[in-house]
Length: 380
Image 1 (cartoon, rainbow, N blue to C red):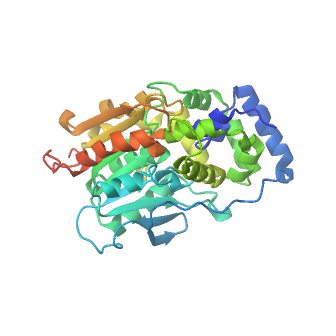
Image 2: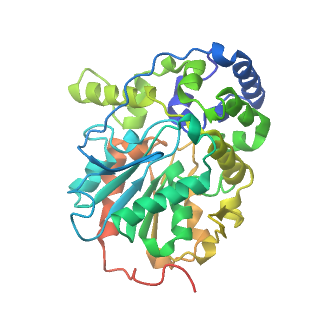
Image 3: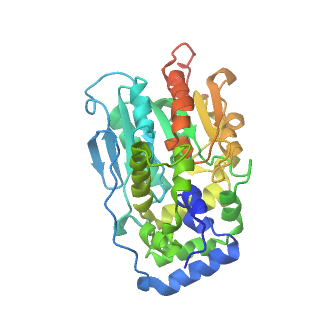
């Protein structure tokens, strides 16, 4: 059965697959079929986990995350540190380090970020099915403490709103914050994804979790979709390459893209449902109702320097969903920066043009100590 187009799958499904059906009725019908099939759904054998293009050392290995160090070892080099918070979605953190010329890690290191770390979220095991947002925030807090804050925090996509919530909950532990392609205020500019999230009954999402025995099983759902509809055009758009041709560069990047797309992770059902209800349906973060680790997150008290990056043609996270941060926080205008890059969602993290244009500017902003950024991170 295949009722997704390849382009939809490429651009959106790695986030929240139940949301990218062509209509809510189809999503409900497909979910019911998946639940009914249960163990009869036989996904293809799992491909090997893809590796990033940049050498790294796992310096913390926790049940839900691996902390990758691209520098000289945890605590070995004093000074400022940068932590990338990868998306906690249905594909792995290699999205930040895909291939030469398509690696955010590569760009950050080349621009002089010496102490660089990545939160590489693990696939959810059976005993992780009940993990919630608070559990991931607490784990992120452990990573920051191990690195030694305050850190420069870069949140990508679903990792972007998580990074923002973390910064608001622990403002003294974050020096500067970068949010790229993150759905902070889905109501600011509805996207295909956010509209379907709101319109689809909660029972549909619960059905996906039930079908996975308490988890959202990435391989099962990917097999159910028919992910083999992806073609070179999807990769070209994401990688921002003009044409495929037969060049070695494209062949290598396309192979890395395919490996990243084919390898999926499982998500805790409790986390998945909580994100749907709080972030999309309730819009709790932008509405000031989001509670994290026992404290209501009031973005109007956050005064951190923040850089927002959005994609002009992003149908997963519309630009204003990201840029809404500028009106929600109390950061002085001179410490708020933003950019809207040509291209779609995945191009923000692996597109050659965006990595060569927007991200070096973000690094210059991170390294610019001329701006006053020693103020209290939150209002007293």
